[in-house]
Every structure is written in structure tokens, then in C-alpha cells.
Amino acid sequence: MSGSDVTREGVQGARPGRDAPTGARAGRHRRRRGRGEQPMVPDARFSSYYGKPVLNKPTWEPLDIAGYLYLGGLAGASSLLAAGAHTTGRPGLGRVAKLGAAGAITLSLAALVHDLGRPARFLNMLRVFKPTSPMNMGSWLLAGYAPLTMAAAAADVAGRHRLVGTAATGAAAVLGPAVATYTAVLLSDTAVPSWHDGYRELPFVFAGSAATAAAGLALACTPSAQAGPARRMAVGGAALELGTFQLMKHRMGLTAEPYEHGKPHRLLRAAELLTGGGAVLAACAGRWRGRTPAAVAGAALLAGSAALRFAVFHAGVHSAEDPKYTVVPQRERLAARDG
Image 1 (cartoon, rainbow, N blue to C red):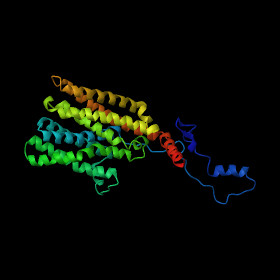
Image 2 (image 1 turned 135 degrees about the vertical axis):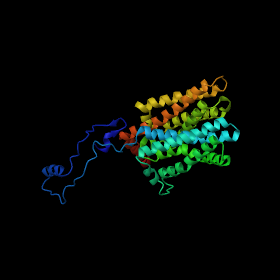
Image 3 (image 1 turned 30 degrees about the horizontal axis):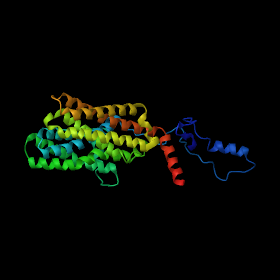
Image 4 (image 1 turned 180 degrees about the vertical axis):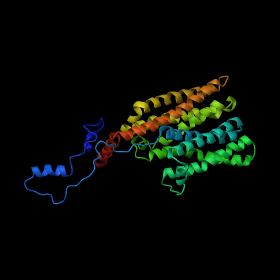
């Protein structure tokens, strides 16, 4: 397979597993056609990449890593909601959000450690402090954020050490936006085409998705009289998530194609329906009696946010498997640069 075999329509004429006619055999052909010319150095021998993808696709387990992305977003946005509820005197909403943040970040860390294989590998990432590494910064962020959420939740449930609980709630809210969005930076910093090319908008998509998830949990578990901030967060988060995702796909061009086929496409359609429908229902839930509409809206928002994270994960893996998403955009960038 030569470079010209990779087109926008896919790989043309590839024969997987077949090596290029190089080395000693190719040298014999050249000698038969030559007119007495003799090679001055031995024929080079090297391995071929024919039949193999340009990039090695991520080997992460979807449930571990997509779940880690989703639960981290739910935790970060829940901390913001908890701080708002604490400030405005909504104890029911505040308790749900604090418990949600603590539970979600615990499960998120468990998913990450499960993918790494053993806890020591997570601790090893804390041996250095490297601001240029999103993975290293994310590890330090989680190490500082998780204890704060647990302290805030424990103080609220126990009803003791309120000053400590208030300080932990505020500090967790400060770190919450970074926890909700740093995973988008982490994905965008890879060479995977459908993740890397969305680097401008993906953090905003994840921020909107985190907001809808936190709002969904609050709507499902909080009395309607205290759920006003959650309803507003649901509407704003849905608008941010759905709007910036469409903008991202439009700007990405060819590398947005994996989002329009197969499993990522089905998950995205489900995410749009669940998030859009959940936001509309959440906006109207305050006018209706009973908690059923709010609970249904909350469940839809939680499911829609999860579907989006899994769609992003699977689209990235698919784009790494097909060389055209790596080669064709690179050629186009080089052609544009050379005029």
C-alpha cells in the first residue's frame, strides 16, 4: 500500500499481509534488467507496514473509559450545583448534589483504576508534576478533588463540622469545572483523528453534557420546590451540548464522518433525543404537579449524557482504525500550506 492508495473513499487496492517487493528479491529483479551495473552495498531488509493501520487504535475498554468520562462530568457539575444550592438555602438539592458528586467521582476513579489494571499505576502518575501533560494534570486534579467531595458529603449527612463542610463544598465547586472538562482535553491531545480535530469545541460539549447529567440526577432525586436551579441547568446544558457538537462536526469535515455511521451514529441520535426531550420536559416540570415528569426528565438527561460519551469514545476508535482519517486531512493541510 503506497500513500496514494488512501483516499477519501477509503483504502484502494490494499492487500493486507502482503509485503512490498523489497530487499534481496527486488535486487535480483533490478540486476536482471540492468546492463552490468552492480550494487555497491548489500540490499536493505526492513519490515513492511502493509496491511496495518496508520495508528494503533485505543485498546481501552469502552465501559471503563467511557464510564470514567461520563462519571467525571457528572461529579464536576454536581459540585457546582451543590455550591449553588448551599448558597441559596436549598438543603435538599444540596445533599443530592454532594452525594452525587462523591459517588460519581468514586466510581469514576474505580473505572480508571480497573482499566489501568492495579491502583499502583494511578499512584505512579503522581510521582511527577508536569503541567504540559493532560494525563498528569488530570491525575493531580482527581487526587485533590475526590477527598473534597467526600468531606462535603460526609459533613452534610452527619450534620457536624459545618465549617469544614462549607469549605469543602466551595473548594470542590472551584475544581468542578476542570474535572468536568479535562477529559475532553485528554482525548483531544491524542493522535486519534475524530478526537484530536475536535479540540476547539469538545471541552464545551463535555461541559454541556456534564451539566445535563448533574441536572438529571438532581431532578430525579430532589423535591420539585427546590429543583429550580437544576431545571435551568438542564436547559442551558442541553443547549450548550447539542449546539457545540453540531458546530464541531461542521468544522471537522472528513474526521467527523465516524460520528455519522454505525454505533456512534445510533448513540448520538439517542443522545440528541434523550437530552433534547429531557430538557424540554425539565423546563415544563415545575408547572406540573407530582414528581413523575421531573423524574422522567432526569432519567432521560442522565441517559442522554451517557450516550454522548460512549458515542465520542466509539467514533474515536473507528477513526483510528481507518487510515483515510489520518492521511487525507494531512495531505489537505500540506496542500493548503504549500498553496
